Length: 233
Image (cartoon, rainbow, N blue to C red; front, side):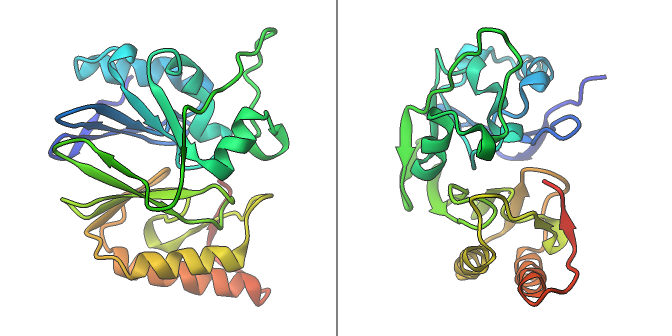
């Protein structure tokens, strides 16, 4: 049974991922339709059905923003890259375009694998002016070197990828990541006024201040060699 898209803000929809695939978030803005993360390759048909239920085709998505370079967030890029602009932080873009499978964990399984392309190489504080929504890219290394969070100015919501989860649960620190960078990234997010956080997996963070604080506590436990609440994502 196909999960129906969930309207979480005006013009913003949660498209839940299946299995280990990431959630996808669709922003139907005044100027463009933006998809945050494309999810696993094998979940594409599920994603396509959710888009159709909103009256959209794949070609109606104008921009896909990847929150980082892992396969469960970039795997379906291949189905959008001929008609949409694909965006990622430059540290993620390097690994994706040079097919650094050790870091991305991406292989489509096709005999003739389609190379993934990144059209927009993002920097910290890059902006997307969508008319009804304005998105700011916040570089948040830690889970990976190319991890970003996306801040929407009007509603003060954050799309966090695998940087922040409900309850402050940590994602694992991947091959290109760093616990120290992670703590610094979360500390910078704490300085923002945030109403809610929409993560790449799991439940919505409805108490951002508490979840961010707990994430730092859990990360410091890792540095001290103590057991911390973490997820294998």
